[in-house]
Image (cartoon, rainbow over all chains, first blue to last red):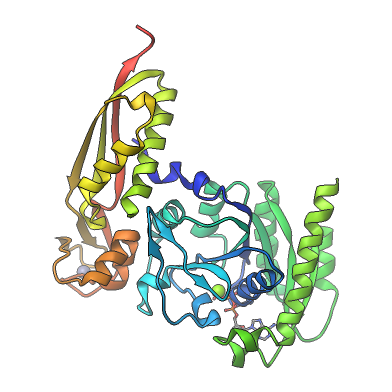
Length: 250
Length: 135
Ligand SMILES: Nc1ncnc2c1ncn2[C@@H]1O[C@H](COP(=O)(O)OP(=O)(O)OP(=O)(O)O)[C@@H](O)[C@H]1O
Ligand SMILES: [Mg+2]
Ligand SMILES: [Zn+2]
């Protein structure tokens, strides 16, 4: 007759000002490192920030943050643990490092379950690390969270951008808010992506250069935040907050 | 307790349905819970009772339990979920998010993780009965 879980999702998310999904049509473009670093950056600027890993079959943000212990607490639902100043939740707390193959229906069910039982605190922003593509997780967020905003990650590659074009087309067609497109892993600057994004009418938030130092810092947040990668994400974070300020003005 | 979060959902769903169907007073609510999630029946009933809204009055709360049945998509083997021997940590993980079962169980027939939960996964509002209008 009715799924009681769906009924409370709105209420569970009502303590959060903005929810931003870090998405891409393509895998491996840097969604997880961007999502994690963006959340850390904003938290260090004094905002209350949450990070939710929705890549259920291949979660990685716990590795980027170096999460080693702690578990969500149970209190009339789940309370996300505090990790590096963030309210943090990942299914990896429950699946550990075991292979967890899930089909679409299972992914939907797990998303609904987590959203309905997690009790986030008062947050200025919840960053959501998405699996690649426009499959189950994207469709479920579009269905369940109408106020969801999207930060789209691409690389300079034409192939990566063509997948992003489809994602932007989907989001634009549904009139969902796209906070902007980020161009990651840039080695040879070109204006291809910027031109295409602007032609489609979406904000282009800037470049994150390829940083050979990044890999060695994953799992060590202090080192990660010292990289030129984090510095570039910091500029994206400022652009993102400016976008909002501009949006409010008109 | 996580049962409280689920109870909140049940009460919200009952209120919405009562309004949609023009029920003046709800007399009976039937909730089905799947064995896989190992929801504590007593706590769930207690929580629904504590959270009940005025429209629910003293409505009877019925909680039915459904056995969890799993079926392998590779070899079609069908079996019943048995929480025995899973250990507390694993049981708790499945309790929060039943899909986590795919990290811990394999088909007893062929060893595949590609099985489906045919029945008895989580919580479901099965029926809401009540009195209509203002008579
Ligand atoms: N700007 C960068 N400079 C150097 N390495 C980077 C940069 N951005 C990402 N990487 C590296 O690229 C790899 C993929 O990044 P990440 O896992 O964040 O991508 P993803 O889009 O989340 O992938 P998936 O689609 O599988 O979830 C990681 O090893 C990461 O360290
Ligand atoms: Mg990722
Ligand atoms: Zn099998």
